[in-house]
Structures are given as C-alpha cells and as structure tokens.
Image (cartoon, rainbow over all chains, first blue to last red; front, side, top):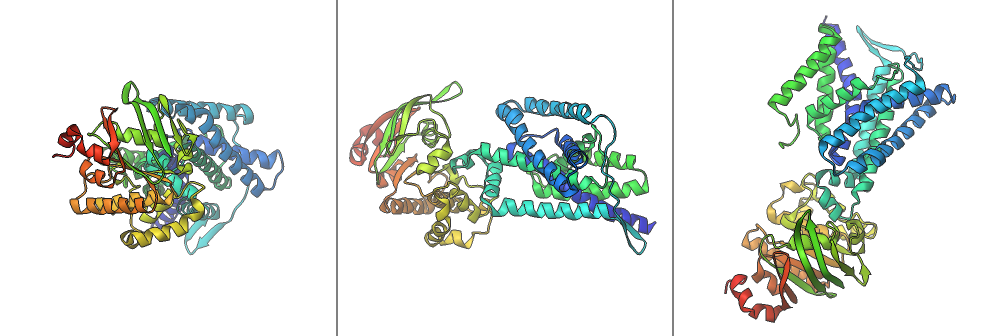
Length: 286
Length: 234
C-alpha cells in the first residue's frame, strides 16, 4: 500500500508538471490580453491531430511532425487573435466569453469533419522504468521533464527579452505600457502565438500517452481553467503551484478510491476555494 | 517644438478638453496649472496618443502627430511621467527602467543610459532588484522620472509630480526638474502646486474645466489678480 501511495505521489508530480504547462498558456493569455481562451483544450486536441496528420499522411519523421504541429498551433493562436479577440477587445466580457466558447463547437466539429469520430493515435511503445518496487512510465517522465524544460524556457523568455518585458508590462498596466511606447496589439499577437504553440507542445508530449478524438480537448479546457483559477488568475507562479496540488491530489485519490472520485474531489476543492478564497492561492484581491 | 492647436478630447459623451492650444519651444519649460479634474492629465494623454482628440491638431518638430498611436509618438521623442509615479509595481526597478527604453530609438542606448541614471539616482541603483511596488512614494516618483529619461526624449511631460509627496520630497522632485531643464530638455509640466511650478516655468497656461483661461510668461502669470488669489494663495 505504501509503495502504491508513493507511486501515486510520484505520478501526481509528473502529471502536475504537464498540467502546469497546460495551464501556463491559458494563464498567460488571461494575464496579458485579459481574455479567457475557452477553447484552449480544443487547441491541444487540434495540435494532436496536426502532429498525427503530418506523421501519418505526410510521413514526416515524428519530431518534425511535432515541430510542424507546434508551429501550426502558434499560427492558429494568432488567427484567433485576428478573427475573434481583436474585434471584441472592447466588447463586454460575456460577449468575449461566448465567442470563444463557440470556438469550442467550431473546432470540435471541424475535427470531426476532417478526421472523423474515431480514436486516432501514433503507437509508440515507451518502456516502464523500475526503481525497487516503484514503477514509472517513461512517457510520463518524459512529458514531465519536457514540461519543466519548456516552462524554464518561457521563464527566460519573459524575464530576459524585451518582448518578455513588454508582455509583463502589458499584463500589469496596459495604458502605461502604451505610454512607454509598447504597441499592445503586437504583444497580444505574440502572447496568442506563444499560447497556441504551447498547446502544440502539450499535444506532442501527449502523443505517447493518449489517443485523440474530437472531444479530447474538453476535459483539458476544464482542467486548465480549474488550475488557473485555483492558483489565482493571471498569476503564473500560482498556476504552477496549483497544477502540482491538483496533480498529486487526483493521483493519490485515484489510487485510494477511483479516477471518478479523484475528478469529483478536484472540483470540490475548486468550489471550496471559490467560497473561501475566490482570488485563488496567489491572486490579488479584486 | 510642440504645437497643440485647438484640440477637443472626449470620454464617451463627456468633453474633457475644449479647444485647447499651447506651445512648447525647444529647451523651454512650460507649465499648465489648474484644479483637479480640469483636464490636465487628459491633455498630456492626448499629446502622447493615449487618447485621440476629436478635433484639432498636434505637431511635434514640424510633423503631424494628431491621433498617432503612443508607440509612434514615444519613438519621436516625447515621454511622460504619469500621475502618482505610476510605475509597474511587480517589475523590478531595473526592469521598469528597461521598459522605458523599449522604443527602437532608445533600445541600443539602454545600457549607457541606465548607468547614467544610476549615477544620478543612487537610491535606484541600491534598489535595482527590488520590486517597484515596494518603493516609497518619493522613490516611485523618482523612478517614474528616471524611466521617462530612458526613452531618449526631447520633450518630457510630467503629470502632477508633487502630488501626495512630503514637502521635502517635493523639493527634491523640483530640484530634479530644474536639473533636466539645465540639460536642455523641453518640459511640459502639469501641476496643481502653482507656487512650485512657477519657479521653474518659462511660460504658463491656466486651464479650468477643459478650457484655456489664461496664458502668459512667468511674470505676467504671477501678477494676474485672479491667479494670485485662486492659485498662489497670495
């Protein structure tokens, strides 16, 4: 039992890393553009399909197919900015939310038309690593390490480049950022491109773990949203911490009870948080 | 250098500026005095391109900048020190300065510029890694002024730099404005503290409820009976 719990804990940490990466893009977009990208999980789904398509239809090497998927998702992110977010920048919150929620339906149906309703995936067998009595799937370990590395790169991008600096300024005070000579529109495009590319990265790490279908993204949208709100909307560190909390709690509960109970518990925790501390772990009081 | 000609600026249906005209010549310090809510901040925001005027024109160094977006105006050499030392609270002091040099003209000079600023404001150098939000009001105002210098401006606009500061700190701020003036920057200063502002002014405007009420050089401004009683407390 103790080994099982330890294993669940380790798996929870590994899951937490991937969730942290997933939530990061949603959080960044909210922090900078002040918009909730409702179709974020559906972007992961699309990224998965694109990698699958490049690999099976164009016979590209897997890593090239993944790079292609990441680039296409980055471009799609910019397209969402151009077609949906820009025209609604000054619109009421509800209109923005509904427009992006409609995108969920558009993307899911588009995927169904193009790729059909079947489960699709790229069969890759990755070994299971054994440490004494502990077994770890290397696909999870790889996803975790890749997620942490990607987050590290994003941290450097945000803190060491002028674009990163501009992104952080726009997130804090867009009028002042304009007064400093920053064009927020450009920053929004960069942010949506980065957020889109991130969904491609997440999809690439999911390839050895999951198969994809048109409704694959829904649970990830919800998961990312829960993590972001739990951590404090727009607070990147808060999102990082809450991803690990949610990862560990769901993973351990899944061992003690079942995955269904784990999902229920995660959402109950979320609801309780909203009652007790609606601004999230590290969010500023509104 | 800067010519503002009969601009009207609205917030929705509310008219904040009505036919305001003013001029700043090279190396000149011009002040705009007026009560709270007179539209002084709106005037600066309109010049910088944060607000679009509905009518009128703004020219800077002979070029039309009316309605140009702020990032274009900053690039041409206008910078602003916002009201209340509005810095980016979660960015470090150093990063706040770096944002000031975001425009492509200033960016290559950012490093040397920052070293000069740290010589000028040793307190900012001591705190360069600290979040700007943790600074005192006076330090924040200093940082906002320093940040405005980072963009290599030709004209610096200051929005109520003495607001909410202790008298000693207000003196420091005005000493600094004096120093910038001596270095040849053109300055457009908006202030409620007319006594202080007049000491550094070459030319002065009085604005009330979005309208220009009076203008004149320092001496005539000083002697106007209405301004004397209403703004200088004499």
